[in-house]
Image 1 (cartoon, one colour):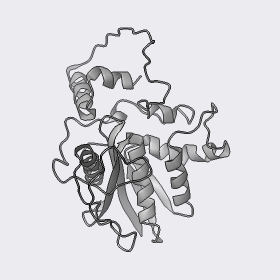
Image 2 (cartoon, one colour; image 1 turned 135 degrees about the vertical axis):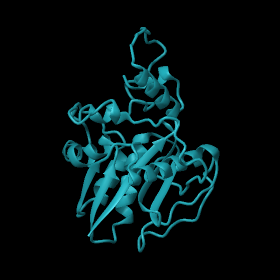
Image 3 (cartoon, one colour; image 1 turned 45 degrees about the horizontal axis):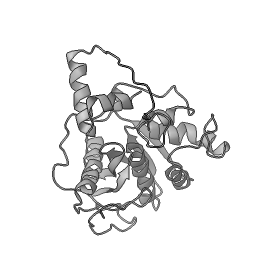
Length: 261
C-alpha cells in the first residue's frame, strides 16, 4: 500500500509568522507553525512531521511537494552535504541544518518517493495542505488558537488547540495551530516555480537561492550598498502576477523583486 500525502509550508513576509501542514484527507492531516520562520523551514517541517506521523506504518510513502528546494535537498543534495560534514561545496554551512538532520534521521529505512506538483493550480491535496499551512501562519500572526489536526490513526496523539504565545516560539518547536477563518484567501498566490527552476543549479547555490530573505544571508542589502535603478518591461499578465505575488507575501513590489535577485 502507498500512502499519498501533500506537504506544504507558508511564511507571511518570508521570514515572518509561518506554518506547515501535511494532508492525506479531511480525517488525516496535521499542522503547526512558529512566530517567525521562513517558507523553506515550513516546507521542510511539513515533510519531517509527515515522516514522523507515519513512522509506525510499513507502507510506501508518496510525498507531493511544490518545493523543488525540499525535494532536491532530500533526494539530491543531502548525501553530499553529509559527506562534507553538512557543508556545501563552497565550504559554507548548510542552511536549515537542524531540520535537515531531523529529516535525514526520519527517512532512514523508509520506502518513499517525492513528486513535484505545481503549487496554486488547483491540485486538491496541495491546495488542502497549503490552506492549512497558511492558516497556521495566520494564527500566529493574529495570536489565535486553532486545532492541530487529527494526525494519523495510530500515530502520535493529536495535541489540544493552543493559543500561539506572542513573541516566543522558535524553529524546531512547532506549536499546534490552525486558524479556521479565511484559510482559502489568496491575494494572488506566490508561486516561485512558475518563474524559476533550480534543478540545474546544484547544491552549491540551490539552497541559498531559495532562502534569499534569510536575515543572515549574503544577499541582504546593507545600508552602505550603492543603489542602481533597473527598468523592466512586463506584459499585462506578468505585471498582474508580480503585484499579486508581492501582495501574497505582504511586501511591496520593489521588495518582492529585490528578493529574487
